[in-house]
Length: 186
Image (tube, rainbow, N blue to C red; front, side):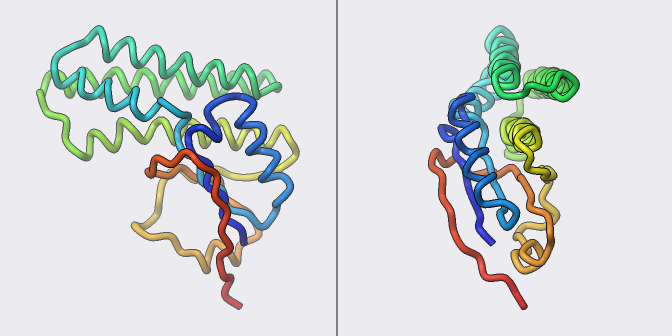
């Protein structure tokens, strides 16, 4: 089984995302894919949390709007099916609203814990994983999205034995595309 990891630059524009989709399409079905948030999104989300901690509502609300606009634009550029695009736009809007709510809480509590930081930043990867999966589906590659790890370490043997690949989010910030071979258990 191949594992492809697409960093922020490799999925940060419509052109780059579609190129990544084509790499996966050529490798399917024996491929697992990990995507980062689009380039700059993780920094935008962290900046929103830090602004909330300072009580800077204007900045964190502005960053939530930029987060939403960035992904809505990506959806418009890569997703052709109306219903699928609308579903993704609603998910992005919900993620943006939740981001604002989290920042309001951070601001009121004057506390930005590691757990809150992880939860805030994860929406960048999770939303990109949904967009990437939809783009794969539109290009004839049926896949599912896994955005919640089931344990602290992956079960490679179990994943390699399955017939479906996964598109998953990754907490690492990496801007390159890497492919590695994993050994499947017999």
